[in-house]
Length: 260
Length: 307
Image (cartoon, rainbow over all chains, first blue to last red; front, side, top):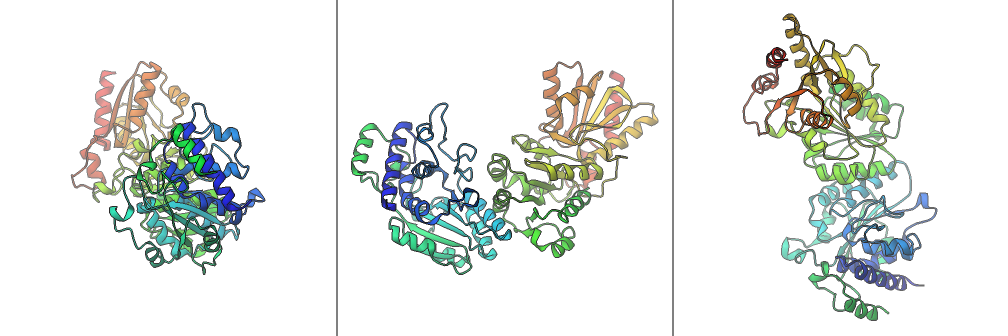
C-alpha cells in the first residue's frame, strides 16, 4: 500500500466524519492529508511507542485529518472515529490530548502547538534523546505572534530535531493570506530567522519525502508546503466556503465518488 | 521573600537535573551565579512571553520540571491563553513564579502592578495559587511546588519582607494562625500585606483589642473545611489584601460564608477595581487605599465596638 493509498483512505474517512458530525473545517483537513500520509507512513518513528517521534497538529482545527490518519495506522479505532463530535462521544472538534492515544498536545487555538513542539525538541536535545518533533502549522496560523516569537528563538537554539510543515493552502478563515497581510515571501522570512527553509509541493509525496529527510544543516527546518484547500474533491478545491461548510449527504456521495 | 523562594528552588537544582529554570529576560542579581554554575538548567527566552509559556509546556512534556520566572504581568497576563491551554488544560507540573505581587513595584505605574492576578488565576482549573506572607511561607511554597504534579502559580513580593513565622513545621495548604486572640473578630490576609496586618494587631493590642490574625498562603484551592473551622465562633471577618477586593481572597470568602450560612459579617479591605493613576511608593499606596497598619487598626477598632 502506497502513501497515496493511505491519503485516499484518510480523505474518505474525513468526508464520512464531516458528514456524520456536520462539523466544519473539511477543506482545512483535506489540504494537509498528503503531508500526514507521508509523515506517518514513511518518516515518523512510531515503534517502540515510548521512543516515538512526536507529531503535533498545531492547526488543531484540522483534527479530523489527524484522527483519520491515526485510524489508518490502527492507533484509533472505528468506535473512536464514530464518536467524533457526537453527544457523549469520544473526540472533540479540536484536539484534547486526554481523549485518545496519539494526540500529543491539546490544540485548537492557533499558535500554541508549534511552541510546545519547540520546547519538546529543546528538552529532548538536552537529554541526548534522538526523538524528533514534527509540527504542521497553517498559513493563517502563521500570522500569530507566538509563531514568530518561537521562530526567532529556535533559529538561535539550533533545534535540528524540529521540523515544521506549513500547510500553505492559501485560504484562511476569511480570505487569502497575502490579501490580508504582507505574507510573502515566506521562505525568505524563515531563512532570515535562521531556519532551513524549503518550498515543496504539498501534494507530491516524493517531494515531501525528500524534503522531510533532507539534512537541515544544524538548523530547525520548515517546509513551506504549497497545498490546495479541499484537495481531492473538485467542488471543494480552493474554495473559501469549505473552511466552514457542512458536508451534506449529496456532497458526501459526490466526494466519495471522486475519492474512489 | 523572593530570594527565599528562589534560593530554595536553586538549591534543589543541585540534586535534580530534571529541574529547569526559564527566565523571560528577568533575574539580574538573582540567577547570575546559578546560570554560570548550571548552564544546562537555565535558559533566557527573552521578551517573548507566549513562546516562553508554550516552550515551557513542551519541556514539561519532555520530562522536565520547569520553573518560569518573570514579573507577574508577563507570567500571567500577556500569555494568559498559553497558561490556560498549554499548562492548565494539560495539567503540566510547571511552576510559575510571578514577581511583584500587589503594589510591590509602586510607583512604577499600573502596567507593573499585580492587583488582579488572583482574580485571573482563580479562573484556571488545575492551578494551585500560593501567596506567601513571609520568607518562611515562600520557602514552603517552593517545596510544595517542587513536589507538585500539577501547575502552581506563586505570587511574590521582593521588598525585604520580614519573617513572621517562628517555625517551618506547618502545612502550607491550610490557613495559619499568626496571632491568637478573641475569635469574635478574625482577620485573614495573604501576601506581603501580612506585615501591615501584624503591625495593626500590635497597635490594637496596646488598646486591649486582640483580634485573631490568619494568613492564607494557599488561596486556590481554598481548604474550605479548614476555613470553616477557623470561622467557628467568629462574628466579624476582615480580609486584608494588596489586591482588588472584588476578586481576591475577600470575594472568595464571601462566597464560602454565604454558602455555609455562617452568622458572621465580612469586611473586605483592599484596592477598589480601578486603574491606579496616583503616584506613591508602596507605603504611600497602602495609605491611599486604606490597607496600611493604621487604617486596618482603625477599621478593626470600629468593628470591635459594633461586635
